[in-house]
Amino acid sequence: MSSFDRRTLVRRDGTLRVQDGEVFDPPPDHTFWGARWHQTREHTVPLLLERLEEHGAVDNLRDLSAPRQGWWFADSDVHKWLEAAVRVDRLDLAEPVAEIIAAAQAPDGYLHSFFGDRRYERLDGSHELYCMGHFIEAACAHHERTGSSWLLDVAVRAADHIVREFGPGGEHEGATDGHPEIELALCALTRVTGDRRYAAQARRFIRLLPDALERPGGHAVRALYFATGAWDAAQLLDDDALADEVEQWWTELVETRMYVTGGVGGRWVSESIGRPYELPNEMAYSETCAAVAAARLADRLGDTLTERRIVHNALLAGVNQDGDSWFYSSPLAATHGNEVNPWQLGRDFSAGSLVQRFPARRLPWYDVTCCPTNLTRWLAALPGWQGVGDDPMAEARAARPTIIHGHPRNEATRGCIAVQLGPFVMCAEEVDVPELATSSVGIRAIEATIDSPLHSSLDELAGPLPGVRVIAADLHWEGPAFGGREVVGEARSVPLVPYFAWANRSVGAMTVWFRNLGNVH
Image 1 (spheres, rainbow, N blue to C red):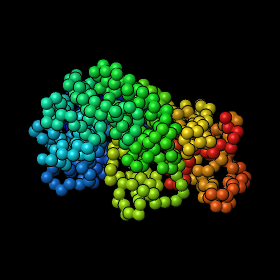
Image 2: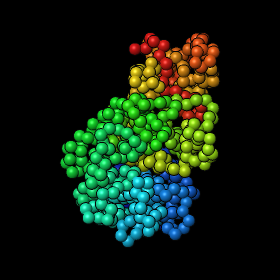
Image 3: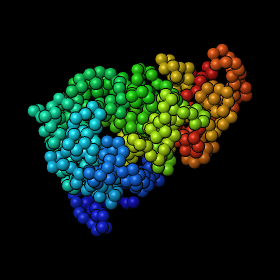
Image 4: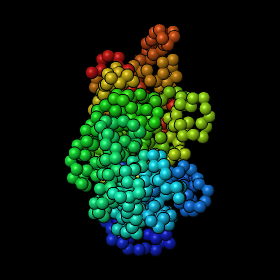
């Protein structure tokens, strides 16, 4: 695809119409990130639309009187998909869906397919403002990409409705959605229209929760969206005090509650961040949506180093190499076999989202499909992200592998090491060492010693994956779990692959962290 003028847009019937727009250069398809962008454009966006249609998410908006299909917040997935489709120039797919959404809007600007006359009765969990926020973001992207204002006008009507209802003197003044997102959207609308009323309303929502930025905690995605909205409002309204709160919150998050992969969310319970250094490996929640949110906030804050860590590891791991199945949670270790979800508590959740997410594997669909659509819109926004780099594979090939030591306050990684090559955190997979993965100790207990310098084996793995090798002891355990002993056998070389690429060749055991035999400093 060559550079083209965005004033020329394709209608559904194949004819052209002209709008004022920007000139855009799609990233080259032979580069690491360019290939992902083109895959998103040609494969993932059309495929996701098929699945959203199949599961009724678009029909919910197409006919508000039809029987409901899926969750009450499914509109948000259509809106996130719409933003992705616009950003990869699939207007042939995007505009028909945009017209469906616009037709679903109520005369007063309200836009949600589920609640009807029961508006705003349960804002703590209704996701009404959340869903409208994702639509507003999509409409802003549509205007930025096409120069057309017809969809932006729908977003303005929705935002004006929100300001009337939730602003000073409004019927719902002092209330807000339990899931932040509208704050980001209103700020995006201020940037596009220049109307500061929207950013001011975003700040009013932020100030309803004065303690939320005191320390990182709670639901990981919500917390990150909240902080991002607060930062956007602070920038647009020159609120230095609010900006300082966000920066301090972010620093504490990165230093005490972020995985080496850039993932956020150590607890499955409430999908939450957890306490300082509460970062379990196999039971990491580390939701893909949290990685997307963290990357966006890091980008805004200019924290390029952390953004690079997130996008090349936790975020990119969320989608497979073919662009058609996704992780919801991204652990840093996985055991061998198809173990049941420990959170089932004896109940049958055969169709529930928890069973879908453990043991970790990428799936083509989730009943809550926030992660696939969210990650797709991030990939669609390439190459505008600061932290992606020009060619991370070349950087990895030229880099000397580095050793990362686990923090002593994190019991899951105390005394352990991880390996990083360029921007990529590396891991060991069962497919490369099946005899270790199925031993009495298991792959997660590999004790590693590192060649000096660490040996690089870039040409020994299938495909364009950079690799390094560690020397692992062949361990076995004799006796009971509480008082046996390790028997150390023959040492062997274990290849490592980038964490983002695990579970593409097969699903099995994996580990990022290795026990340190003591000679690695």
